[in-house]
Amino acid sequence: MNKAISIAFLAGGILLLVFGVSAYDSSSSDISRFFTGSATDKSIWMLVGGVFAIVLGLVGLLRRSKTD
Image (tube, rainbow, N blue to C red; front, side, top):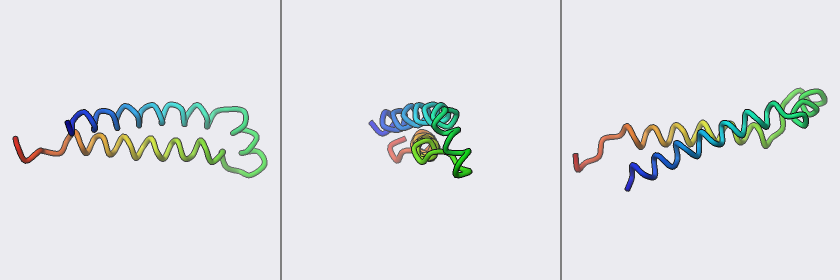
């Protein structure tokens, strides 16, 4: 059961990372970078959330269970 949750976190993190990169390269993010010097908050939060979910999923997969 824990492995399935870890795989779900890993897959969700990869999806968030892909969507975050896509949002970071969007035209609205380009306009935001032009005026403020930084990308939109949405793209940044998707990138951060994706990395966090990937790390959480990898830790869950690589951790040894007590029943092994």
